[in-house]
Amino acid sequence: MKVEALRVGTYQTNCYICVYDDDNSAVIIDPGDEGEKIYDVVVQDKLVVTHIMLTHGHPDHVGAVPYLKKFTGAKVLMHKDDSFMITDDETPSIAHLLGMNPISIVPDGFLADNDTIDMGFSKAHIMHTPGHTPGSICIQVKDCLFTGDTLFAGSIGRTDLPGGDEHKMRISLNRILTNIDDNTILYPGHGPSTTMKYERISNPFLRT
Image (cartoon, rainbow, N blue to C red; front, side, top):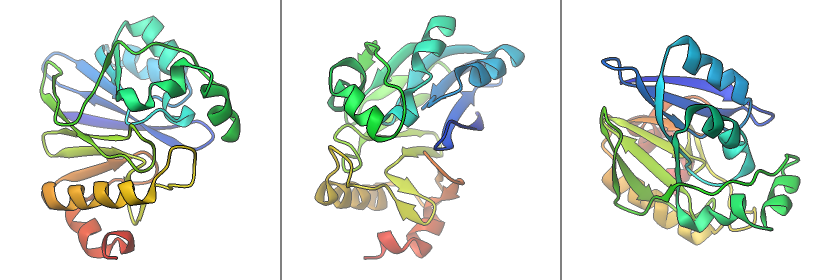
């Protein structure tokens, strides 16, 4: 599997395009903005996008979903506890708080803790990791873990936005520490990639 990272939007959110080389099927994770930029890669590489997966519902991670859904027809999947952020009247307040435009779209399905999603070229395993938002998830594909805004290189996600919960974040981080192998590559929602081994040793938020 090849992972291509695009930094998009005001908050430089990492949008990941995961591609299986044999048949060019692909999954897009967290298309936060600049749908045209993301779709240009899809067209250029002749990718067949099967799923758009969201680690959480904040607007800087979902802004390009309607555009990409329109042009790829891919299934949009997220945790149900964050679906209100893109489907009901709460959306504008969260989007405007971050200085972004709200979107409105109905997910094609929901991801729950311990789900295994067949992506064609591999299987994605879902870990519900609330704390940054109620419906935050991490997505594990082989030796890669897409952590959204739960865990960053050298830091963790903030819990002071609406729906954030510091206690739940601690539980989620402990679960990652307990269950994720040191050799796993971490792909966060912002900033550089890292490894579980490096974060276990160096991340001050994982040592307290």
